[in-house]
Image (cartoon, rainbow, N blue to C red):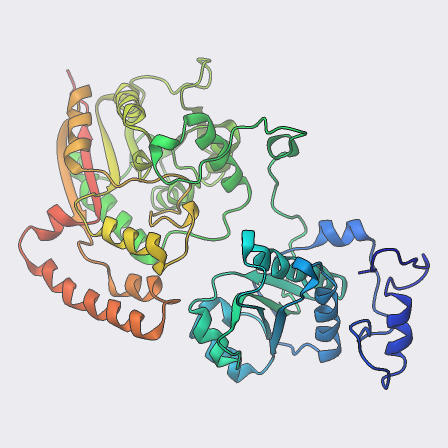
Length: 490
């Protein structure tokens, strides 16, 4: 927080000398140097950097405005493009107003203070210098909050930015960049999420890496990059994008409907969950089938270990395309295999190879339950809306279940069937679910849309749900498609 070329006494608070002097004299003209607190708590720089955490749960306790002002003051000492400092900060600490803001974006309803960060439209737009300026300010505020014993959460999903700005009185020429939630944390994680190794992201003089694709198209991802990305996502804790209630209901219905079709029971002696990645669904299946001996097949040992620990006792671990026999799954060993929403992230040849490997792993008479998102459903339409700016952008927000962990492409049911028949599987059952978006999904997907657009889309969804009464419509057009296959006994 010390300006360039200024000397600071090692024993001081770190506030520029003239700022300390002016804060002691409230009558002095404020030229931006005047710090709200004369002697704020100090912290070693490296401790401040490495101990900062994103806080998602706050105490309801109000935050004194002198602390808020100190956070803001740290923010305005950030660098800005051409030193224009065209930022405006609207602090909302009125609970009633925060409740109103939460109607624009649900993420604004978690903290007692929301700092709306805006930047002047038309200033420093080249190469997003305006965004860079605001981001530097927010980072300064985040670090300052941690030093002051507060928690913060950097919110980019602010919903309709113009509506949010209007609610706090910002004029139309102020652009809402983000919101920083602020308050006393209910708890602070002792450890931060694991980071990508420095050797993967740092380069000297010339780029020498292999970039993670910014495309959701599986053809742009080779297996090595997908493994690296999924490992980073899983080991970072997956605090968001967990399966939603409508997705979990579909999974439960598929397992209860299709797996008993062979033997009339859910239990299997040996059960292999294929590419569970996050392990969320493995965990759910394990809780409902306690007597099963579980195994997982994953891309890397780290992710396999993560998934294996989600069931009790921990599952046996196998690695996909492992060069060594010790880590490869045994052939003709498993009674049941499940593979949910993972083939959509693979290239065509890799899908076929995975189907063949699953056939080899099953005992004769064993069963495979595959779940996938159908290309013949409404999925691509809603994904098109999202990709054109009517929802969160980025590869990580592609509309796929459990949560998205890389590329995703809805599959044609005929393609899945052809792959299964080609390796020798015999169809034993199918189920199509959710031919139109459930009401709770529509509510969730449109929660950060403008009120008018949100109401329109929810109304359209209500009308479309009448289609599910047509005979066979859900079976053929359901977004979630499940197929049961068996390996012949001879």
